[in-house]
Image 1 (cartoon, protein in one colour):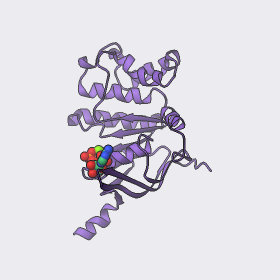
Image 2 (cartoon, helix red, strand yellow):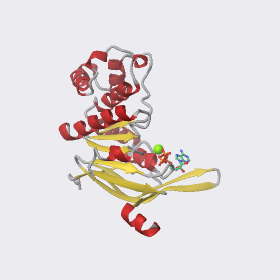
Image 3 (cartoon, helix red, strand yellow):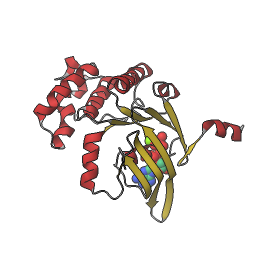
Length: 236
Ligand SMILES: Nc1ncnc2c1ncn2[C@@H]1O[C@H](COP(=O)(O)OP(=O)(O)OP(=O)(O)O)[C@@H](O)[C@H]1O
Ligand SMILES: [Mg+2]
């Protein structure tokens, strides 16, 4: 049955990587519910499993065990084609490195992945123009990535993630590569997208300050979700 309230749910989510004959449990049975319209930040030490969790939520990686539900639909057991469809229609990704194609213009970069997913340029065009205005790059529509600052390039990557009108934006350290003022602008943009466009956002961040733009923080440590207050109590 579809749970309309929780747009993302995980149940006993487990991820194990095998390298040679060594197995590492990276996620150790995570139970997580994210409500439609939330803006959640995931924090935790390097290697705690934050990126892995994000990739599993977006269907970019397979779980070793347990489940991920997106809008009530279980990804595990789904055909890859159906997972790609959900990814294309429901989820947008933003990464620390913008991964723009250097020889394509801003407009072409924004349109490319959606067109590769089979969408028609003429159907995408109005939303692309609207997004250029939202991210403040209307005057850079025909510029190339090398003519843009880091923050502007990240805005292009955000517009690219949103052009297919996803309901969920998954962002892995979106401001990790930016100076603090530019990072602040990107966080303000995320807040606006969350509040005005009602996009559910899950971001991984190392910056405590950036969590203040969202409504909730989840702390991961060594593959489990911890309650930071309890942890302080234990280690105090
Ligand atoms: N493809 C892989 N093969 C083997 N081990 C992996 C793979 N990807 C990640 N890991 C391991 O899983 C653990 C968690 O990695 P992950 O990238 O999720 O951490 P993270 O919390 O995002 O760290 P960071 O803050 O440094 O980005 C690490 O120990 C990492 O070495
Ligand atoms: Mg990471």
